[in-house]
Image 1 (cartoon, helix red, strand yellow):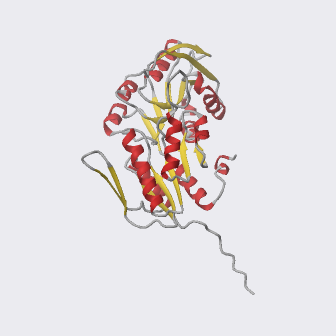
Image 2 (cartoon, rainbow, N blue to C red; image 1 turned 120 degrees about the vertical axis):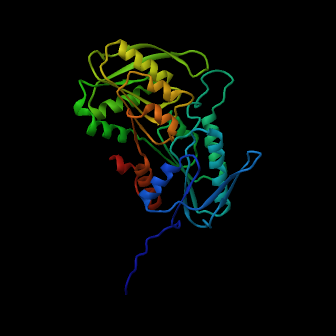
Image 3 (cartoon, rainbow, N blue to C red; image 1 turned 30 degrees about the vertical axis):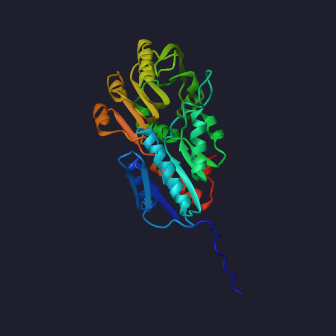
Length: 329
């Protein structure tokens, strides 16, 4: 008697779909997986309504929709929701939303009267549309995970950034110190410092009013005559990080490096960074940086791709293997 062991696969093969938010990153993930991006049509009608049509059946398949929700935020978010609903109605076996940068991450609590918790709303919308699982990178606040009732992989790109610094830059740095851009990022900043075996300093700032402007106040820790690595999760208008650069320079820092995951760079964020006395920016491609913005930063920016990280997690999710093992967890 021959016992044939068939691997039990509840889902069919991997099907990759890309929204229009991050075409280059989607293609890199597809290349990593050796899988084509599935055909789909995304049309915006004259009345701004978005329409999606799949190029082939996904019945019984394990589907991954790659869509970042950076600018244009609402167009990208609606496209993601509509694509997920389209896949659900076409009987996909499992739908995973792969959202490298998740919008509304800052609206994560009622920190004043009469305000929304929009991050929770976005999670609800993704679930209602038909998402079975989600993947995202470095959300602004950890509690965003608790807003989802579905399982997800909340990953960090900090390993990529740290490896890059340790391999390519560390040896040329003079007495380096990590600086957390504010106390809210202190815990994650400490992880960066520990993984690079550097001391840490913190900037204490107080926000005033509802606009994106914040007021940096004091520096806790020593930066004089040292190279400084300022770390944050995302840079939006660049005003907080500009204040951070100015304060460490006032306190006698030598070369300043900026390290962050999400390069949102709204309005004139790229110009603001370009005008700062910094040596190098290290970031990732979770939110695409337009050619116009890149022009301002050319020569001083390194964009690391999260494609292999997301690709590897997609393989592991599909095969039902541990994701934590990738990070020795």
